[in-house]
Image (cartoon, rainbow, N blue to C red; front, side, top):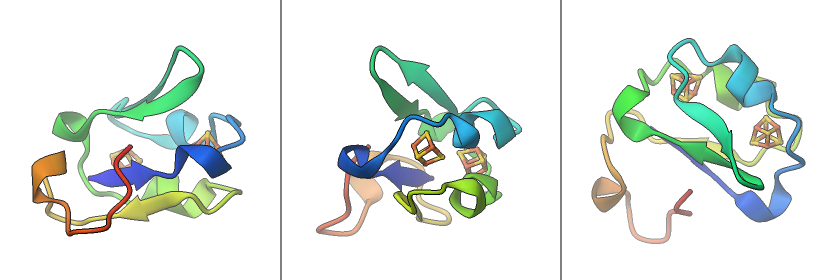
Length: 72
Ligand code: SF4
Ligand code: SF4
C-alpha cells in the first residue's frame, strides 16, 4: 500500500490517473487511498510531482504501517 502526505498534495490527480486498480481517488477535497485495491506497482509514487506518496510494499492495511508512517 501507499500513504499520502495530504499537506503537500497539490491535487493534480496524476496518481489517480495512472493507478491501474483505481486505488486512489478524489474523495471530497483530498486524495484517498484504498489499500485493499493496491497492487504495489509504484506508478503513483513515480508520477507524483509533489513527492508526497510513500510506498510500503506488502503492507495491506494501516494497522501494519511502521511507527511514524503518515496515514493517508
Ligand atoms: S502503488 Fe500502484 S496500485 Fe497502488 S495506489 Fe499506487 S498506482 Fe495504484
Ligand atoms: S500525484 Fe501527488 S500531488 Fe498529485 S494528487 Fe496524487 S498525491 Fe497529490
